[in-house]
Amino acid sequence: MSPLDRCRWLVVSSFGLGCSPWAPGTVGTLGGVALAVGLQAASPTLTAALWTWSAAAAVLWLWGSLQSKFVARVIGGVDPGLFVLDEVVGYVVTVVLLAGLAGRLPDGVDHAAAFFAFRVFDVLKLPPARRLEGLPGAWGIMADDVAAGVQAGLVLWLALPFVRG
Image (cartoon, rainbow, N blue to C red; front, side, top):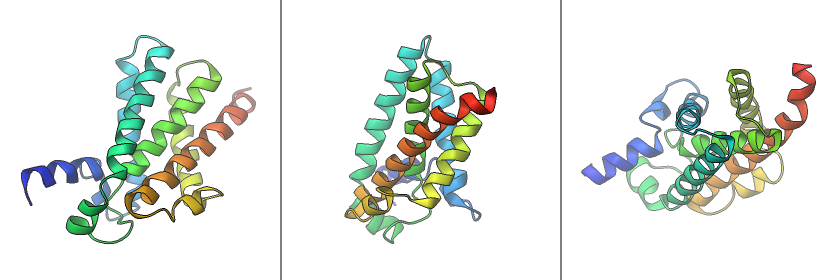
């Protein structure tokens, strides 16, 4: 594998989290948690965090969507378990919506709830996620998780005030 391919592999596998023998998508989502929490810690305000998260999600989504040939050539398969960049992006989308709609930075409870909600919606693949999954190549790999992130963020925004009292 070339040095460039190794760098690509590190990003699409979320620095190896996608290599987990048990639930690589769930373990890979932890890369999204680390990214979101790290960017939040570096952001002095909600507005800064929203811009930073949104920019990171957009760049990673676009770059990940363009990796079809790499996935086919190096990893193999249509949606290999090792490719977890989609989970990273989906989690960050969940946090962007939750924080943006709630009007506050998420705390630990919010991040934990976002993790579990995103995983539930990613596994369920409710419409339109299932349909988006059918897009060609890495576009489909990435798009269904963005949809799951939107769904999870909206549901959390509606549900957390009732859960927290």
